[in-house]
Length: 266
Image (cartoon, rainbow, N blue to C red; front, side, top):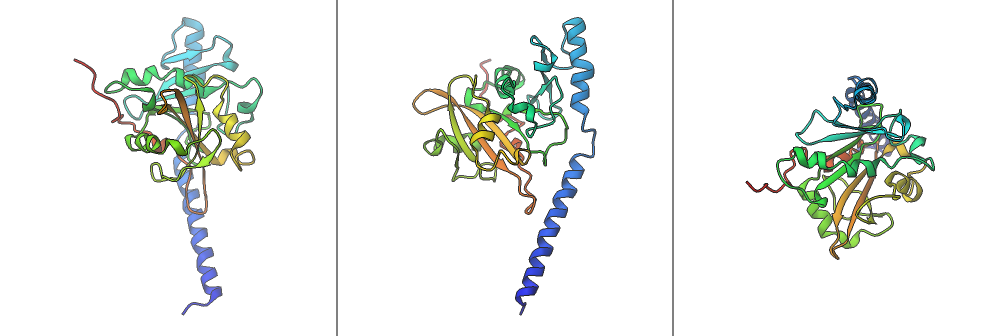
């Protein structure tokens, strides 16, 4: 029979081990070059765009309003249709104060408007409900430059959101159904475009606990057509928990094989 003090000691040991495993996992993810995508954008894509009007090796570079207000789209190494939307100015990640400035670029809006690159590379046709855009938390990213993963949504996640649409309101509330094995906070945004609805600012302003710990959060934006026929978006947010080794990897709701695509006509 264990004493209460023994039980407490075992619990502390378990928590310490969990934290150690999470730190080890984080270090393994950062074992590569954390500046890889920034070097590609800053040293190759932007200069070739400025000199020759050619974004390569990026798929697209928009610096019409200056490099400090621009962004690039780079094909990710994983999946046939996954792209990364990357600012052309240094922005570390979701915790960066630059994303909350009054004149901050709405990078999610830019990512949404670049979704045609995803469909072009996908195995079939996609609807607005088939796209998911994700920023991972600081604990689950491998790069030190902000990047939005733009790709197809997992079919089971898309279907679960459809079935539980009534529970998703215009303010943040917990989803009762897990998505890709995790429970998210969700909110809806109306409109065919994000426009002035900046998901990062919406999370920082109104998601409980986010403003004091932005870096621990993951943020996902999914296009949708609601049951009443209007277009909009569903925002998902979750927070890392170092005690259980959960790193808040919103990219998990994406499917890099794009099974949601419907076959194109021959």
